[in-house]
Image (tube, rainbow, N blue to C red; front, side):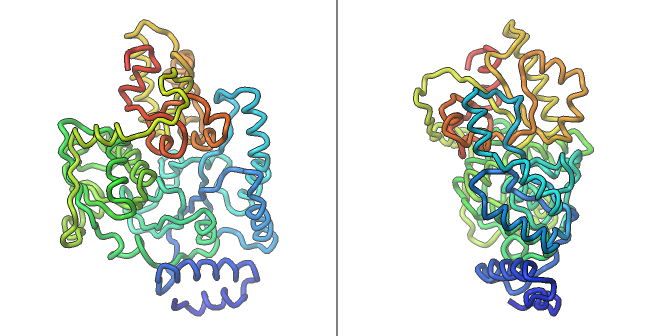
Length: 429
């Protein structure tokens, strides 16, 4: 890798031992992927994935202390993935005890994050790109992010450039203000190597469509045709149609990234790169994957259920993985309350947890809709559902979700939005 004089000096220790180690790590990372140079991080904020204070992460805490002691702080402020704990989310006494042991370093770790460069105490969310949160990259910005659902959104919907990094690599990129130039940062790396043709009879379920795409193309870049028929060609969040399209792509992208390893997709006539370059993005002789109603049904039926008793009744529901937008919070409230009324019920059959960024919840909680939702038995939380499920006790629960990401990484069972609504409000599945 060819380094600039400035980069070489940092590597040689001109800014201290810790900064030299940071630069060395980034150089080694880049050389692993045949990067020939470093480029400047231009995004206003970084985004870190390791937001949870697991007691076993002692090497990370030791490293953070050394970075702080030597002043190797982030060159940019950053947001962080959601916290793993929230007392409002249903927990048994044993679960509360286990959480305290598992995440015993949470408070200490958050203090370290603040010293390194955390944007503020409300900056904990996987959807940092929401307007309410403020970490919204511009088209062409070079980022150093780690959260897979945020990376794929930034690349695809916003037109920024970011590789799928690890949490520590992301942090080091933010500290140095530089990242290796390879993969999705390059024009060549952003070319589509798959063509996906959406030929469904109705607007497909975002999480299900993303799952199908992710499992087929894995880490490659798909060019999606036919989806603009259902989403239009507007990604401006100042319009309702644009917000709806962005929210659909948010959920679809999270599923492509978790059910596969997609870091970028293009949607014909809709996403920035596709609008700008069209079919010039497609590599010659790329294979074609057709997704119709039958294919989505096949994919859905392929999901395993790992509950001990697959006929057991659900006991908890998570909606919002990744975190919901304000519009989705409002939309779900209307759908759920309307279904309760239709089924002659005032409360949900079992607890329903809707998750969103702290800033989104702060905005939503003061509304009349939020009060009605609370009376019906819903819990509003900024927790990470995946971290909640990431223990032996919660894995035994019969949890349902509309998130393909949560289904993939936990014992929760996937249902479509319509099925979820019917189940939690006492209607038929």
